[in-house]
Image 1: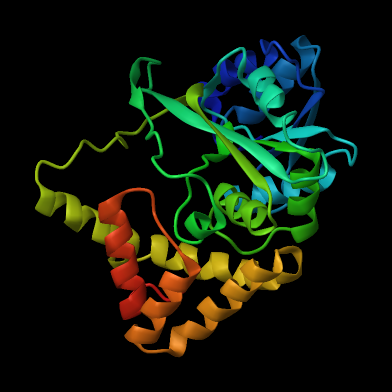
Image 2: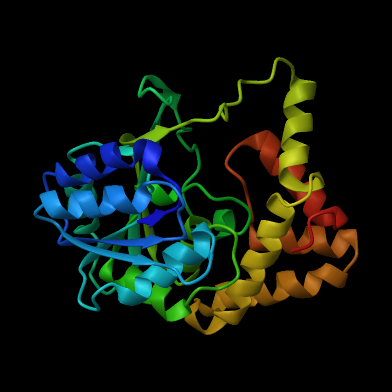
Length: 303
């Protein structure tokens, strides 16, 4: 668990972890320099729970992605399963048990992780909707341009945990997108559950309603995918650089795709489009898919 000024909702999340039908062997918390009551709440919980709690404060701010990825270094090497947890959600009591039962279907030497849909809740805990049910299967070709695995739903098997730890903490924006890219790139499995195991809290007025028109829908997607600064444009670039640095951990054909996509940054639109088609990259929904391929081909998104 990565924490940062999470006092408002942290107690409820900790209680939900304590109520898991399959109890965690322990909880590792890395705080990123909270200035509210987060640390007091964590120590209060440590005094009342039977769960082993490892609490540490980062010497400097790391940001969420690096905080999660560096925390993997202190997870015991023999951990059979590792889950990421946010500070402000609520886990269904069966979340871990269901995830582990799914992961047991995968050979233990194959990297794999479980992820699921989300049940959205507001600041008061009222259920307000569901995250998308993805129409297309998880794959490396999808992970290159889209993330469908929200980190707080993810449970890694031992092989995936070791893979991520071996890769270190690259300069990526999202730890969960990086996990999706690396695990699929290495030939691992992604088990996506359409049954939500997380009550995913939306607070601060960050829930966006559906656009009223197709024009609005297209405009918002373009802004999110590649025109507005620090959105998918930056994420794709940094993901690809991290994948290139970890290319020896990828399947040969996927490492080749990464190298070709990097080289295509200096190519013309026709060559880029041909390479994207050859690599088979795709997003889950048709309009997003068409927009991102156009932006990539035109060089607006500099993979």
